[in-house]
Length: 207
Image (tube, rainbow, N blue to C red):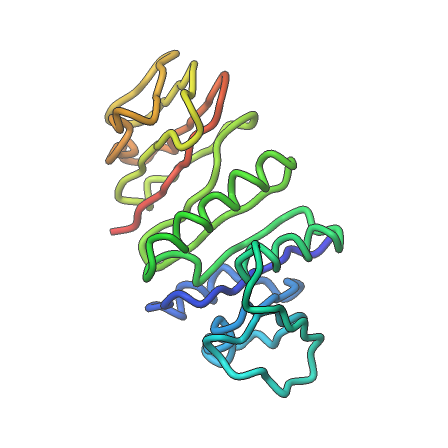
């Protein structure tokens, strides 16, 4: 099954970096003002969704869903739900962080929704990769300068971090004390993160 790439409308400051994540078989969904990124990403739209309050309704040879301005779902949430309905199992979100904090936090909540549904999902921007760690372990290569673990869904229990400057064994991380920020991978190693119960946001941070 193809991977679905959701392109939202936040700024993208390093198109070369984002293009390095794209694959020839990806299915591209552009959300409203995310269309402004299409030319620079060199990735034609397969599907376009939006209420077009921040971008003109496009005249492009791609399926387009025009949404009402007054609705419960953001354009990005609608795009994800539409992709789920079409059977996608893996997601990459770009243009999804920065700008308005409320939209950034809303897009982070999409990662939690997709994790609940057992889907793979990653948000990428010029500074970081963001994903949820829950049932399956995650890794961080030493090509990343730092990584952080944040609880955004209650308390994560049995957190184990190995091959890192600040290892953890069977620890708890909750929402009220962010002591999982700015860990570092040991040189030449690949850090691993495991969670026995609950889930964490893993943020891999570039130089």
